Image 1 (cartoon, helix red, strand yellow):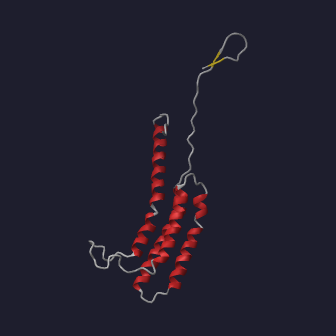
Image 2 (cartoon, rainbow, N blue to C red):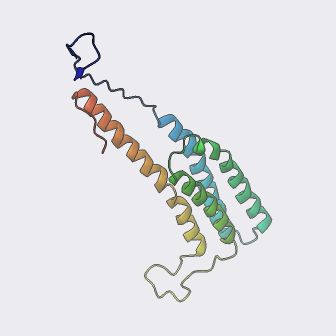
Image 3 (cartoon, one colour):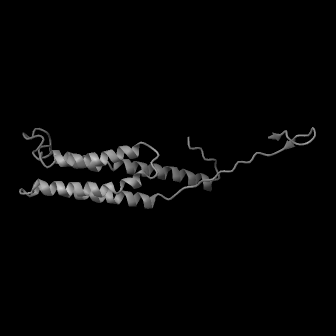
Length: 170
């Protein structure tokens, strides 16, 4: 690169220099701090749903109180999720979590088998409550997918740093 701003008619030669900084935060602590309360709430809600089917005299008020308390507990995790939200998946994840708690309210009333005649293979005992539980736990796909993406990028940064390569993320 030639710099044409020197005095006189001579141009000044300036070599190109590229400086690259790789800065990152460890995400393990944040991942655990956010995910563990959600996992606990899902486990407690699963227990709440399954317990109400085993005990015939379970009152809806008790079931509702437990469900609302768990939803409220998850509400305290939401600000941590939104702290560094860089994509829409965080908002979809929050909607999925609270949608699953909302659907679990309906599981109290529909606990009859979905296939009462038992025509499907091993589906005769599947109830709406089981589907709600599966839907709720399936929401964990989003944070675990993001966790794997984080580790993929970190591995690339570390390998390029030790091998002194240029980092091309595209």
